[in-house]
Image (tube, rainbow over all chains, first blue to last red):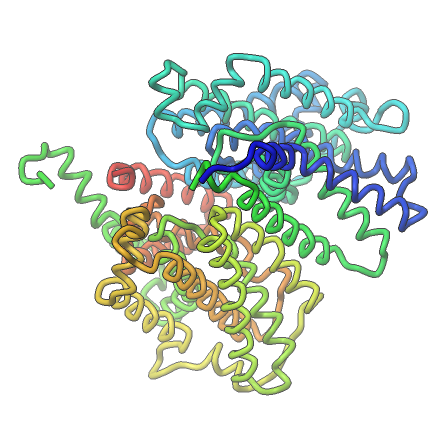
Length: 321
Length: 316
């Protein structure tokens, strides 16, 4: 079947910019409907609460574009947070280095297993989800120990800020820009797209498929750990019951942002829009007041279904199916 | 297959792929008989089986879905929806409530199946949308835990047939039924054919979309049934936490049982063995005073080992 170039273009624009457009529409509707929505305070609270998910989602975007999936991020998030809080008693450097080293190592191991043995990413990272949470429970007395952050420099990392926004928001913005450059302007980024688009073709063209995959999971592990570190700094403690089901929120945000789970297409802008979209939906539901947070899940689920149906209907069907 | 001339290493691997899960269950049973006090008590056996029954029921549907190269992440949320529907309709009696709950599972399965079969959405995304949305719906319908005293429902959860808990009987009957469906019916052969090669199945005229839809409907109904049974056993409806992470347990049972995630092959009895293995493992660790964290770490290792052993078959 052939399609007119006009329609092709429309579908491509919607694919890439659909999430930012819906986000803009929701923000406008929210501002008109609720006086308390379009305030600096509300915007700041959406940004702050979205920033931790966004950091993880940046890594997940790379993984999904490469054709994989990472279910371990929720566990790495809580593992990183607990290690950071534990490490903070030895100073800022340990509070940062210990969790990043541990989470990076887990990401590296998962990447090696996926890239070198051909095991499904879903299974390897499912084992990661279980194993890392188990490790976290083991080192925290079955989750009973909550490490409090003593180091004030580390706590400032999560609580201090500028112009009403805390540091994690700025760090997230920096990471997003860096990830955009990495994905769009470097050979590594092109390799990620190539591996996700057509792995065999990429291998024939000399793309280092295995190495690219290892880096992608390493990155995802590091970023999930970093999100945990920042959150521990914000809460001044390593809370052991966080991050359950977080991987699904993150995957949903990435998919809503227009990244295809089949790999090979997507981008950071969409992912950030997807994360913010879920944050704005939550905020709008809070504005209505008498709706429970369960309602947010219904809306998120419907939204995800709508987006993936739209993705299929907007011309992608031809290319993939 | 050229197994006759395969080197010994390969033969061991092939044997492990085929019977590894049975051997692992056997070893764990032997260990418990020798080293765990009161392991052979009837009460202990019953507890273990009652606990594993809902997972087995969910895993049967999951095995069918994975056989088509799909996956169903929504099963835990469908269990919660079923629990919510039971709480809402129990006023009309236990059986009407059961039927409404199963119908709810069928509707959720139809939604997921239609997205997969007719819209062409990837199974993992379609059922992820359901996982998020349906759990929310269950929580909206029934915001907090509801206890109840309906005698029929309580009987469903706690009565026994000549010593065997009804829940276990239901799980066993469904297992045999599913094994029969997969091995001996046209539908079963179609499921396996579609998972093995969808394009070829379409070309040879199989009703691919209808079979795919039906597979998700079956998974939804089985999950709903598991939700009702779990609710009946707890004597309370708890949509917030019922079935949380059961999709991971079910996928684990299927995969450890040797059904490849790449589809085209379904091992029903081994799936049940996979569920039993995980249950037995956590029971063993708990009985020997090892903490919960160890269970999860050991589970992770077993999943990786099982998939590593079956990966060649899986990618073929």
